[in-house]
Length: 253
Image 1 (cartoon, rainbow, N blue to C red):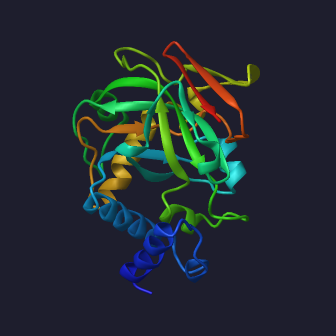
Image 2: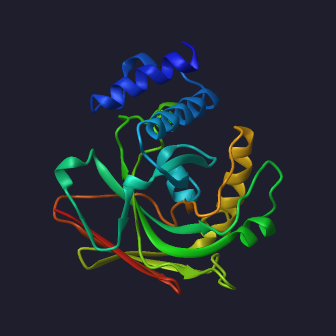
């Protein structure tokens, strides 16, 4: 099938509330999957959605081990998926949900690959916020990575706390404490994300350049998780505190 044909199959499936069309299983390369993902994004934009930014996934070794994959991936963020800290989600509306503990980086200036350096990436970032990515594990088990990439890499929503200036913050030594229902789960730090979450922006700018796209000023970038993915159950409350950046929380009712 052509990219257009594969996009039609997945788009029609998504409109029906399905995300795992049998016609595409085992049929896509990862390169083709990115082409489908970006074509799906263009359909959302044509339908009136707004691009808020991008996500980088599979940055932490713990998450790569869970997925059986050993390189980062990217997806898009729609403005309609952005939620403030303290949001209450309708649990019944989510498909096999989970969350990841991330930083959300705001671009202060555009960045175009393919030869972006780490220093250029840092210079282009203006602010950082504590964040949760709400994911849906909607592509079945075992996970087929190419189909997951085409279906926007499990992205459902992103929750952010207050922004703070990046200034001289060293995001590689930032730490997160994860709590579910007031029970501490783990502590992790930013070195798990490529050594520093800023490297996610560098990688993303260069990867998008391969597809003729770039990072724009004002876009928000989810860095990739400091930790493994956590599942979410009905009535869960989640709070993640990022030192020295701030805290973010969400509930599922």
